[in-house]
Length: 173
Image 1 (cartoon, rainbow, N blue to C red):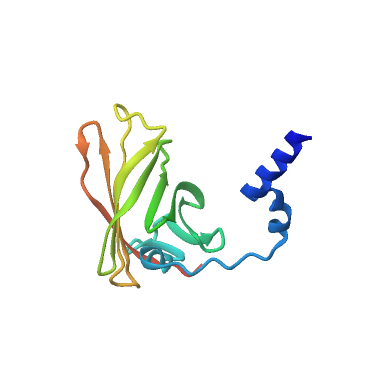
Image 2 (tube, one colour; image 1 turned 90 degrees about the horizontal axis):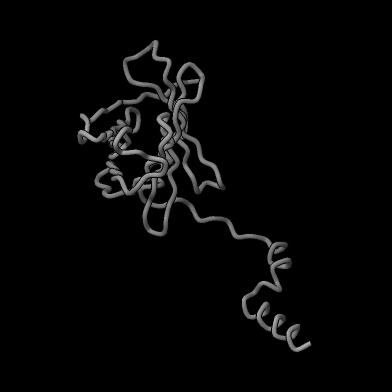
């Protein structure tokens, strides 16, 4: 009996005893996205590279998880190619890139100036740096909302590659 009382006191103190009633209580709405996440959320929709009328590439941005996660999905000829997930982490912003090479670099927002957002490599899962390249930097220039620019640098065992930038235009689908 002494152990039962001790367990009850422990559960009450940690709040676990009231878990079922808490689950039934109404939940508060998640506050709106702020700062860089809000800026990136303006990309929701479908995009393609500027000037490439026959490009098979489509980049789709959409919100999920009650507006707390932004998904960037690359498709080539309607088939999934890669995925990048953006979400807040306290006051910061994280991007995890799911690369066709099979590695998953994680980047953090390292700078945000006048509608330009820069992400820098933090770490990666399932990466063999001796044989695989990986996304090492990622940035968005959102100064022209009708023509945002997405840039990236991949890094291999030989060092960083050349920066690649893609200007985007909305697709009406």
